[in-house]
Image (tube, rainbow, N blue to C red; front, side, top):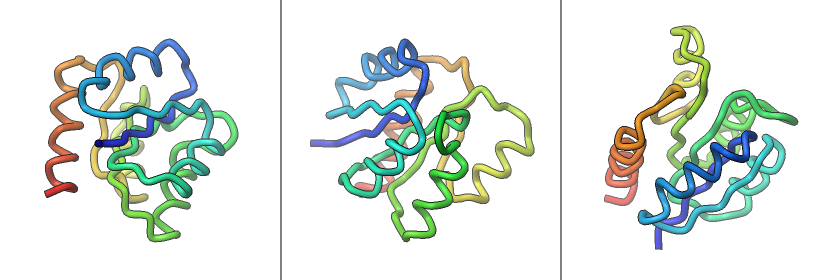
Length: 121
């Protein structure tokens, strides 16, 4: 079964993402950067959906630490930060895709499926 990790501090949005993606696999929700990093380090996930503006560690820090540890789980940044410099920073730190909020339900599903298809073969 496909396992997705959603790191999103806004509980309502996290629940909505879980509802949108529930048909794709098992979804774990965490609400801050520290917990997200711990889960990503200790669990086996097929994809991580990562907000940037998080309590504890921000998404950039989480992503950088994962890549420093050679954890290559695909990461889809899901954030309200829509500036070009934010996107550049996200990709430079190792993101596989970047989607800004608000997003279309269908686009989220398609991007997640595309990343899973590439990573799972």
